[in-house]
Length: 321
Length: 255
Image 1 (cartoon, rainbow over the protein chains, first blue to last red):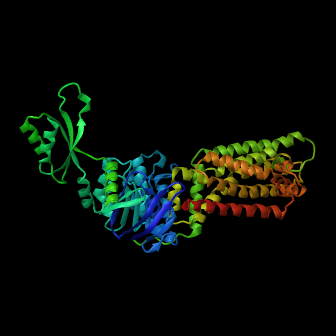
Image 2 (cartoon, chains in turn purple, brown):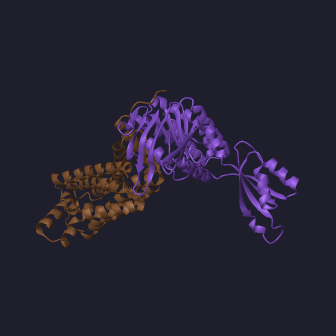
Image 3 (cartoon, one colour):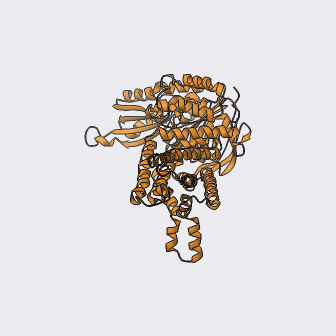
């Protein structure tokens, strides 16, 4: 459905997309994951024909989008990043305007408008002025617009931002249901979202694809980076030695004294970071050792990485490998 | 369902035109411009009437002879054209518009037509002044309508040209204020070219600038003289700036 060949997009000050190639098959749900500024939005705009690549070519359904822009656009439903809308129009008015622009014949227009309004939960606001709607409704209206001409390919840039948890679940289910018929490409910076919806995930950083995998594989890789932090009062060398013997522990790192209570209480408090095998929970074993040795233990927690950290680690490892 | 067939170009332009017109009337701006224009035009119409009471003046002088009437026309054009692309660029709706299956040319033509029609709606009600004058001054049976018609012809010509210029300026920025000011300065220089002439040396340059100056054209038209050269001048300039607008919109792809 989509074929991207060595696409580069250079702006005056920076390279937003740097020599990217990939293919997406018909019916796939594919996610692009990356921190802010990774080039996701630029890539979505390239796919949606809003921008032209500096180098390389983009094919949609076999059509070069630069040479056959209009034909390609007719197959694309595009939801831009901030779901821009005309605030002075009414919901129905807007959908009708977009349906006309997209060349839906008059006799089918009503029917398609009804369909997407029901699908996106807009029935109760159809007469409202867009500027007075909440952000969530605005986003759903933009989504309805992207679906109105029954596109073969759906390009969604951050579709979940501004939605409440119920709406997120509804949109997720909607995309899942659509995914059986149409191809979906979405950009997101949320790992959870990508994991929940996508069959395949591309991780982008600095305009490049640094990893592409199924969510399961990806999760495995991310778990490799999970570590446990323990704060234990005991002779540091001995504690480290004991912890190293726990099965599943790969590395033990002394993070340093627990600085905030130096000078009061025991001077033996230390923080240890334990790198561990994915899939094993070493916390009960750590507690067991501390209890057996009589070392006070006051913190034992899984360290949750911020997405940014995960990306930094992933790009670093890809760079070395 | 298979993807829908190509929309006809004219149908697309009409759809875009209607949206643009509606956008004007959905905001208070349309009514403010219309009222303000009628007030100033009314003053431009009355002032020579009162000044030259009892004297003989050309009827075309009444509205089209007053410089502040034309300044108001230029200001209205700046206000009418400022949102065309700047606003859509600022809010991001341009992205929605330009990823729909319509060509950039259709978008430009639709917006241009919408702005032009709105300009006609703003300016044409002033015709009531002439009709009113005719009704009141029934003694002047031999009211010559020709200068009135040619006066309006010059108004529409200048309008259609300057709207294209304003649209082009609006396509270059995301700030409506910048678009309005830029347009006003550009069309003012063009309109009062014969004043620019005074500060430039060279007889040939001065003659050329006089030839291009709208104030000269307007005076001719207000006397009922129709010259085809300014007609061609304004229309070709309008086409040129429409083309330039299309290029300015396309440039997004390459920046």
